[in-house]
Amino acid sequence: MVNGIRRHWPLAVGFFAIGLILGSRSDALMEAIGRIATTNETVVVPLPQKLEVFGESIPVNDADIAEALSRELHANTYWHSNTLLMLQRRPRWEARVRGWLREEGVPEEFIYLLAAESGFQPTAFSPSGAAGFWQFMPATAREHGLRVDTQIDERYHAEKATRAAARYLKNAYAKTGSWFLAAAAYNMGLTGVLRQMERQGERNYFRMTWNEETGRYAFRIAALKLLLEHPEHYGYHVRPEELWREEPGRRMTLDSSVAHWGRWAQREGVSYRELKRWNPWLRESFFDNPDSISVELELPLKR
Image (cartoon, rainbow, N blue to C red; front, side):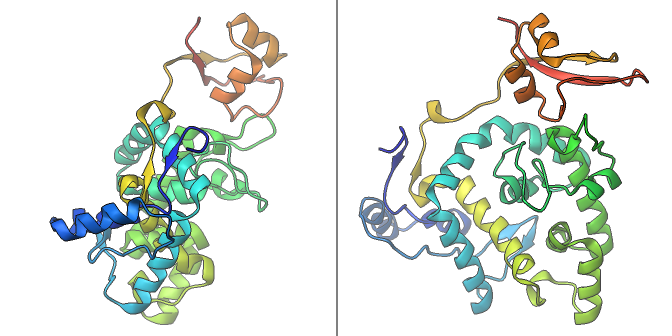
């Protein structure tokens, strides 16, 4: 047991993403999985014989495609700390994120793109300047309706950033006709994807040549879908009490300036740390609001 989380080394690996997808489990295969789950050997993660994401098939019978998927499945299966943290964080956000994606008209499985981008961390930040759940760059965020300035950065606002990402993906899908190509556009930009489609005369992500990062992107999303939907098949065992769940809270609307968020938080019965944890999009210690713009804050329930 490590940090209170039990791990079977080196995981029960993929093993029944396969069975679930195929819809049958032979006694011999189940016995083999049971043996592997309790050994200390490092083993090859088997691939499913069929796999769909976003309602689109991944041609796993193609040797090159299988190798690319295998690379991402191995990388994430054996990156124990990162995968465990995603498993713990996921319950806090999954229902809300799926709901926002559904309302915006994009496949709910784009939650795995979110996992690939930020690992379910609303405050994720990259050296390139991308930030938040969906790792928007500042200019792209503004283009899709998010406020990004010194006081407020809505890239860190889980709901607003999710809806902005959904708008981006819907537009990319309308231009490319494929959710996988829309995902590629999210990674490299829509202009770049359209240029490659024209250059290569293709409209199928898996029949196209990509740069290193975009070429791995769809397979990373697919690997995370397999791992996060059936973690026990890959040897991850997290108890219900070890999951980090959504916390009950309250909302309030504010349309005035705030001279000092710390003192404001104390009057509301919370700490500055709690205020920032619930509203990471607040980027300053004050809020200058001369135009009385309404903002909605989330706070924990009063104790």
